[in-house]
Amino acid sequence: MTSEGSLNVRFYSIETNKRVKGKSYTVRWKVAHRKHSKTYKNFVAADDERSKLLEAHRRRELFDIETGFPVSWTSKAAEMTWFQFAVEYVDWKWPRSSGNTRKNMAKALTTVTIALLRTPMPAHFDPVKVRRALREYAFNVNRRCDPGKPVPSEVQSILDWFKRNSQPMSAWEKTENVDKVIAALGALLDGTPAAASSVTRNDRIMNLVMGYAIRRNYLTINPLPKGKGERSAPRVAQAIDKRCLLSRDLVARMLDWIGERPRRGRLYQAFFATLYYAGLRPEEAVGLRVGDAALPSTGWGEFLVHEAQPEVGSQWTDTGEVHEGRGLKGRGEGDTRTVPIHPSLVVILRGAIQKYDLKPTDLLFPGEKGDMLAGSVFRRVWAKARKQVLPEPELKSPTGRRVYDLRHTCLTTWLNSGIPAAEVADWAGNSVQVLLATYARCIVGQRDDYLKRTEEGQDLPQVAA
Image 1 (cartoon, rainbow, N blue to C red):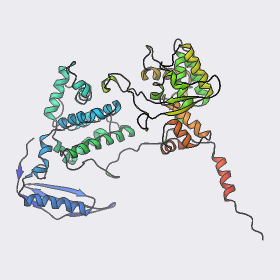
Image 2 (image 1 turned 60 degrees about the horizontal axis):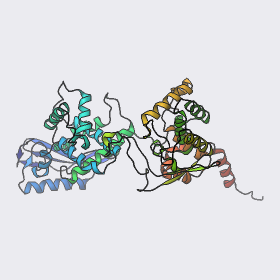
Image 3 (image 1 turned 60 degrees about the vertical axis):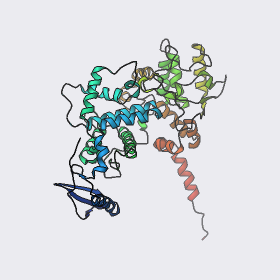
Image 4 (image 1 turned 45 degrees about the vertical axis):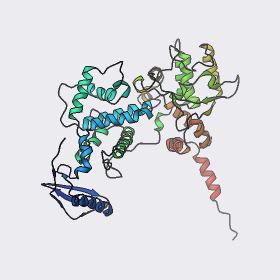
């Protein structure tokens, strides 16, 4: 995009705005026929910006009529389109990112790229195919740069259109464009609000993108809003919903139903029992080997957990595998943690190992062909068990709706059993702070004891008359 420049610049005094939440200060100036302004929370920042603009004018620099800033400030942003920049950012970020990070980054950049178009998309473009072309080709290095599998012609035509019709990076200097991007990132395709966790994740991704743009001199400041009042983003609930927790009776009935399924029922039963008794994350459980479990003939056993195998999709991993081997969440590379194995779980695991003739180097919960157990498989098994076992009211409730709720139930049980939070956090692979923030509302049954101890501790001695 080319824009006209002018030496005809006029500056006005800084305007003070009095508002309920305090004062703000607006820098005002005019380039040729067009007025421009920029508002700051404090006077020092506003005065500094005005001084920089005045200095550029004294040096007889051309000012961009469209943006209002010196051409030397915006030339690089005007030359680079958002689409080109987004591809450049993906290429830079890709080698040092996990599969999940790559996938989430591609989703966020796809949404922003569609929001920053010069013109509406052609009517013959299928919105689903457009998003797939951007997400899985433009912002996926593995597919875009695979010499053995050229980009399909239909996908390439979509990407070529976006290259021609993407706005320049200088578009971020306009408030209306920033507002459009924020609205897009906060909504689903049908226009309904996105989940709070998705909005928070997109915010985090885009702030990293903006940081890269500033370091590469495409932008001078981060245009995304910060602070309360500048954006009404939904709040992310840290504490879990108590309704998702399962009673011991329901867990027992569901595990029994799963264990009675033909062929692999005992294996799936052992998998779900591991989440309930040991509180492992599903991606940690699927990566366990038989040799990672110490299973004595009686009493408690012990897991040595040393890796996670999150399922991210073959197109997002360097190996082309669906799962990606990672270190433990929140721990250093190569770190491990030990988790006690309940005696009941020891019995279940020993039975499954014997039934399926598993060797020490085998996966503890192998898939049909001996490979990693797929998330789609164990989620389907869990959904069927839930439908068969839960009464109608609980089936419609959040109770055990996700496989992860077995872990929630386990950690809550440990805390309610009086096990110190530091010990539970160590077993669970969480920090104490995260553990308490997540499960504080689920700790019950100890209130009467606390009140009794407080009463005794605060009782004053009887003073003789």
